[in-house]
Image (cartoon, rainbow, N blue to C red; front, top):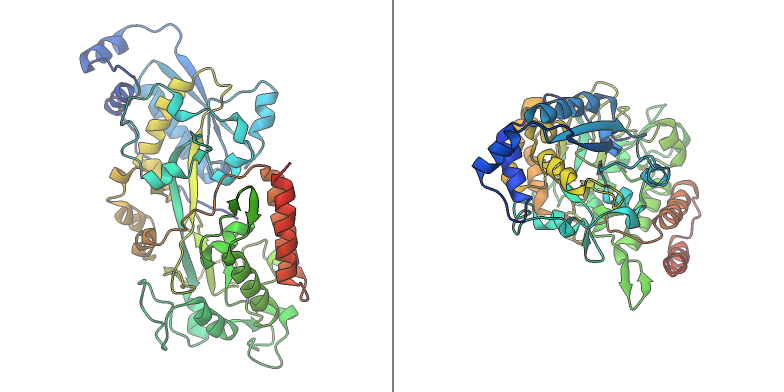
Length: 450
């Protein structure tokens, strides 16, 4: 479950609004002209409706977003910003079909956006002055391109790191995972997924106190596990093994080797090594064994807010696979529906949303704007000084490339098929992994050919 803790809010003033207004006008007026314009009375300000989805719908996020809306509306009199909370990742498509058209949707993931590929306006077709997006990390912009169309403005992304439970490591008399990339594990050997598989059984304990290395270990009575990976979308879980983007050649679908490596490794970790929770175990912890204090290590992006029970934790470097660590990036951005009648005004709001340090800190997100990353470690450390946030910054050097969160046609059907494959891994000890991957590839080909 994605959790984000909201703290604080930094209000943006009229100066930023004016600057953005100039940027967004193809032939921008002068500063004095803008000031004269804002000084004139306005009978009917443009109303921009912001539909908050995804991470932004968490209860503790609402107050920060409401504060942003209030500050924005006080800073100028040309746009009236209204906010509405969606139901998690509830259907924006259905809202538009019903005539309840938002002007801004987000912050959403690219996986969410891909489910509604056809509804997004091309951001670059709006009246943007050349260079208006120069402050954005080019890789974040690329994540929002679909068939040559920029369908969203990136807010930022969360890099994946390795959360670890210090108390479990202490109880097992094992050293903590290394915080620096390229550093060996303290007992010797490189910090790899093979090393995770080596120490994982020692960190896995049943209710009788037996570790997964003991012949007496009962996996059905396990109370803690050595390692787990976040990923409702199967591609997300596979990312630690390298870029899991589906490859297409001449209209044919090819699953990359990372899928086969990951699926076999995870299946072995569950049913042979017994240090990775199966479906039953995940259900018993509502999908979050780490947050319940029942997992020693967790590969998850930094949107994750630990923990539901009190224990000592920190973050460490992602273990490498085939000589390379991969810190997957969960992208977040804002889209503008084609059906919106206020697209240019919506863009003005979005440019302020993506530049607001209070929202960036509250989301614990790496901003898409390069000029806002300077003090990120300091800001996050002020929120939670017990966590080594430098690990998150260092993880930026090891992105999944190409990103796992690619846009896909027939997204709902594709994701459902991903889910049935993942279900087999997690529930069937005799799951024929390679044969099932062949079937998955064939089924995806059929889906994407529709």
